Image (cartoon, rainbow, N blue to C red; front, side, top):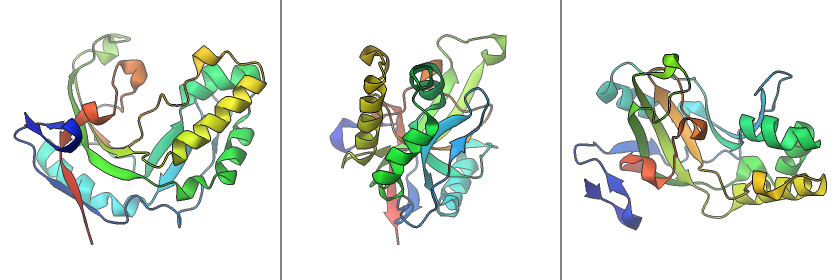
Length: 209
């Protein structure tokens, strides 16, 4: 294993990937609401310009085989399980969350590039037989170094507590910002036992003009 800055450990055979310097700048990208009236249909995201990630996806696909892409790019700020299972039951609405996001200029949140993350293997505790076998997943790991996203989550936490929510069930700092790039079967989440922080790093990446 090769070590990078900040103690990040990369795979020794991993290539270095490139990303446009403005890929994480979303101030000119419209806010996108997700408030569908169905299970796990409501969540909060910072929407990014997918066209700035297309070359990166192609480069990864050239080394990984045929991966699926959602055709969009975003960083999840409040996840569907957090909303459906924790926030919604005490009366926090997705509209209230989105208003907090707008007040704190979510689309101008500052992100810092960390690495390309990869999971290649079997899940530690498959939920069903459908999840048996190997998975392959690539994401761009980013850092909320200025606390813009954490600040939004903290305000959501305050509202949650004001409405009687149990503090132990929602951790404002408990999130790992990333951009899902591609996968072979499906995306993977914390609920699958997959954590997407710097521990997830597989390959270094740098920005280009």
